[in-house]
Amino acid sequence: MLFRSTLIENIKKKINLTSDETEQLFDKIFNGEVDTNSLTNLLDALDKKGETSDELAGATTSMRKNSKSIDVNHNQVIDCCGTGGLGKKMINVSTSVSFVLAAAGLKVAKHGNRTATGKSGSADFLEAAGINLNESSKYFSDSLDKIGLGFLFAQNHHPGMKYVMEARRILGKKTIFNLLGPLSNPAGANIQSIGVFHAKWIKPVGEALRNLNCKAAAIFHSDDGLDEISFSSKTQLIELSKSELITHEIDPKAFNIKSKNLSDLEIDSPQDSVRKVIDSFENKFLPGKEIISLNAAPALKISSVVDNFEDGYDLAYELISSGKALEKFDEFINFKS
Image 1 (cartoon, rainbow, N blue to C red):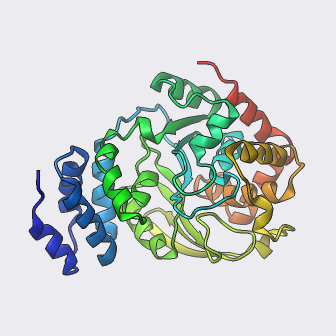
Image 2: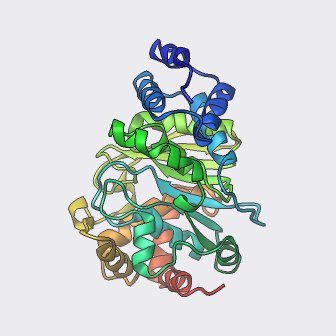
């Protein structure tokens, strides 16, 4: 079905869509009602205009609605992930953070996928560690209930994305879909720690999460270009707390971090990432231990486990030093439903 060209022309004229209009549009996309040529032009026009927080919220509402969701029996569930798309060759930071958060007693619904541009996505990492990516919804729920952590493989929960793949391939650049994945947790995580691929997305993503009634969130991008909190530069972060957006600048100097070189975190395969993360959890690899602790800090703060980022870093560091993060990693890898 050909899509209305007038909509694309309006977007090309920098006319923004409302949240409801975007939701209706993406419903059509996820149901295969927009042909590839029209979708390619639409995504390109949206990118050149610049997506608004209302458009992000509307598209996210649609993606959530059209996903295979999982009901959970917990009032507070957190997800921590990055948008990716940066071609990174680093260890899997946000996935490693998940084990630290679970060791802190939080319920973590880790949503992730294979890498498209880097060396190891969260799914690649966990598969290399021995996880079956195609376990049942019951397995996820049991894992979340019993050990505080479950993994949601994105490809199993967003069937409508098959209608988008060819348009994304043709465009060959980042689109709104790089942002929608982290915003569309199938378990309905109501606390989110999200690294974005460009600083311009920090505020719009924060506003979108507020519009979507997210309980609390941290959205960040480092000055040296990571969708992580970096130990080699400052990181810009917006915290969503009680419907307010609070701006922070994270300076690694405030945490007495010894590591300086991001090159120390480089990997050449998912298996290499697993080895370095285990070394970090076994207190054998300081750069890994410090980058994981640094990225766990805001997640612990927005979850009300600690009052500030510094205490969050100290707690995460201690959970690794004591072996509790490694224990949680082993528990997750060996879990049987």
